[in-house]
Length: 155
Image (cartoon, rainbow, N blue to C red; front, side):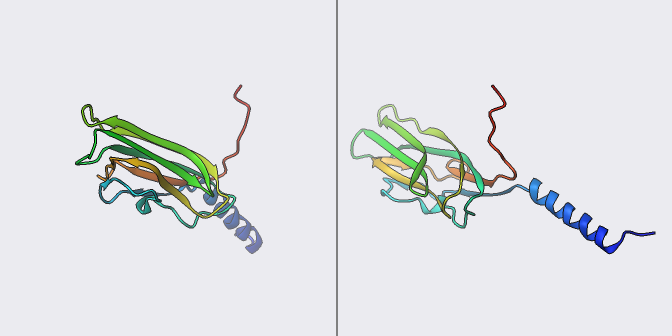
């Protein structure tokens, strides 16, 4: 004796719902080239569109920056804002000078609930700066988080 059509439909629907709760969608983007003295604007290679309003997301990765290839002066300063719906989720800063120039890698980590459809990385300050574009040097992974709920149980 087999399953009734109604029972079979219920089991298939339950299986599909369980899969959607455990499936984690993600997308990785990285710079395609170095950016010397970046303009004060969104970095198009790191822009994510088509986010679902009300859905929880996690952005993680790294930004590597330092001085421009041929700086006009010794000091460099770079600020990149991780922004969503006009709010700054994280501010990434790199400072230094040509004498002791060491490229710095800054971790990216932001968890947010989408209130708009775009996540951007915006250069808000750039003086003699350079963002390295070698793959896996400056990159972002955006994950759609399934079934995550904030809690206060870990006191």
